[in-house]
Image (cartoon, rainbow, N blue to C red):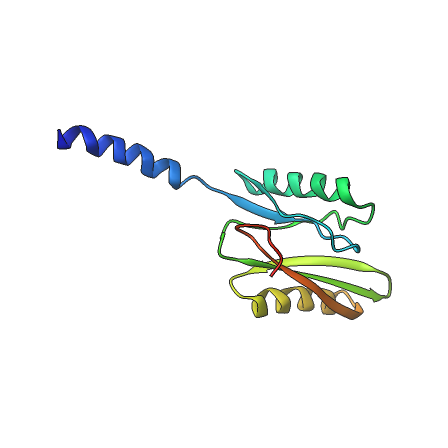
Length: 125
């Protein structure tokens, strides 16, 4: 009887271990939802589609992560033009720093954090 249970547990374990990706394509309205997929490409595609359903100002460059414990930082800048971006990291501080570095290197200023979102649930934090 025990031998029969081991293969069943192994099969269930492999289902749990399937890859899950989260992505968000930020917009200047700060209304983009998190979307999920089985691959990075699928999650990014779904995030772009989800953003386009709620806004005409999508960044068209979704941030993605396969670590469901991560948080997304959503930041928008006003100069030299309006632009929004997101980054995912294990902590809010690391996610924010990643977006700030990206904007700094691109010459953007007048930036502000819009919000954080959970990769696992999509809820604002």
